[in-house]
Length: 231
Image 1: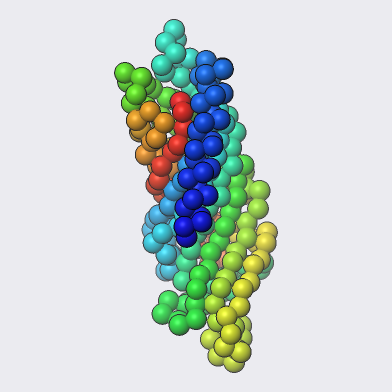
Image 2: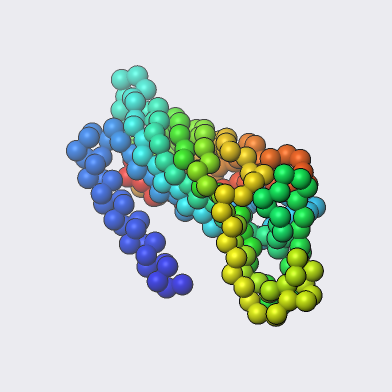
């Protein structure tokens, strides 16, 4: 855990130093954002038992167009990447099916460690950004994500077809890539409120993560966290 924390701090320091250099040389026309957040899985369906903390990360580079004659307020558009981790005690046993999904519940199972669905998106963010006395920053926007890949990861007891019986009893690690039933697009409203280069960040995904139907989970993630940026 200490190594992970140290790595994140080093990434933030390096990114903000480099981004500040870019901002100074380009008269603040470019902005680099690093978002560290947790996804709240809002209103999940009965077949999906979510974990409370779901860490994720996103990165974006945007170009800032001045609003009128003032350079304090801008319209910003760019490109970025995001990675989300939707943890659950409900494991999807047949993620490649074209039919109904089947689940196994692991809450309270001794050898169960984690199960997650991990989609990665290429994104196009659009924001209106306002400055108040050069220190307080507010950003209101929208972003569109195009899915690049989705995988699942399971760490838990070896069982037979999700029955929790007949397995070897050892802990297994299973990773499945490019699973089905996940929406290929993600549409989110965003909000940032901050002081200088640190902001509180929130994004609400308007459409569900999974395609509707076939007994798929239904939830809309609300990402809440911090943005590190020199704009």
